[in-house]
Length: 95
Image 1 (cartoon, rainbow, N blue to C red):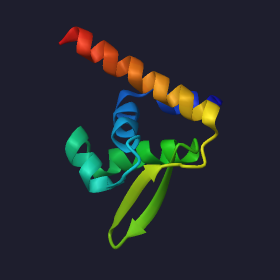
Image 2 (tube, rainbow, N blue to C red):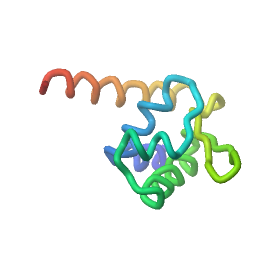
Image 3 (tube, one colour):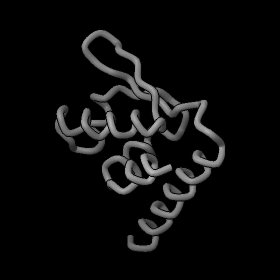
Image 4 (cartoon, one colour):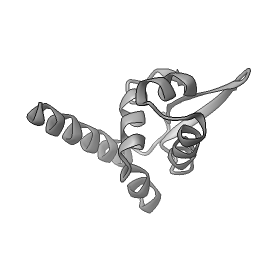
């Protein structure tokens, strides 16, 4: 649980998870573009998410594709979903 909470403490990682949480597979190039992050920065963030068990990766030529880990324990998935929902709700309130 510690690795998951550490992974969730960063806003860029939460934003990446929000994109991936739809169940689709997304190229790191798409994440970089949507989040305005450099390749090295995005790779570091994705490594933290992968090591926490939140995402899986797959190499596709020169790019890496990421997706939500379907085998994540339901209680951990619920924590991530709740954090993402709370952040989305907060963003809506401030706009």
